[in-house]
Length: 292
Image 1 (cartoon, one colour):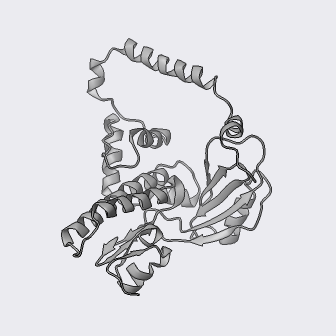
Image 2: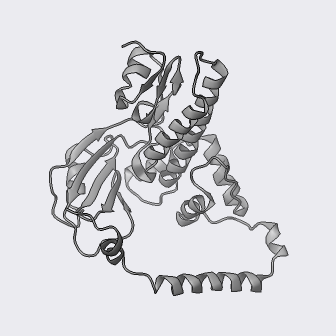
Image 3: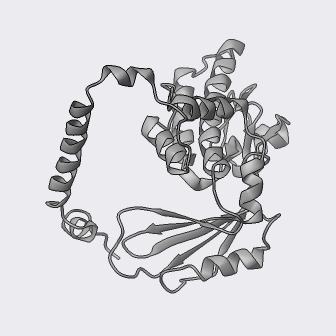
């Protein structure tokens, strides 16, 4: 098939970007060691929870996603620490309802192409790279790639500087997400072999720097192009046990009584509002019930 410009959406294989152009792949499995996943639907039980659960297990974690007609479940794990059969047993023994099929396997290597745009070929989606679904970032990366392509849409020529700009911006997006995912693993406090190894594994200098800043005085400097904002980074850093050794000196300029009153007002407004809201199931039934 002849053409001026090709978009590779061929999945992990990368038929054009890799098989044809030999672009190369940057392996991040030293940072994000999980390399397999099993997925299975199960029967819904009880009221529908308005959130997804991520549940740590021996050598990985499980997702549990409540839907109207079923619950989606999956087990993401590292095959160096647990067998496929053990991983399947872990998943099936931690379902809330009856399994509606057999677990479907998926193998992957976390990382990214060394170039997302190479010559007259642009890789989007799994052909561009993959980071495990802990924060469900794949659709975001696809959308960002499409938006950047529109910004750099070539005319009759392929300008090297524009291609470099696309690759730099997209690579930056991947790396910021990568660091946030690593954070979940590196700061764990579990005692299984897999999790202990994650606590001591090498991490990128960019993440070391961010952790050190927070550990010193609780400071977080979040880039404008970072998908995960201050509240997300704070939730993981503080939630997984990093307590700053000191506080920001600017705190001394604030009135403690006013801060406490402001926090109390926020808390009160949350309680008042949530007490008037319908349950998740009530809202779905009224506004967006599916036909099945």
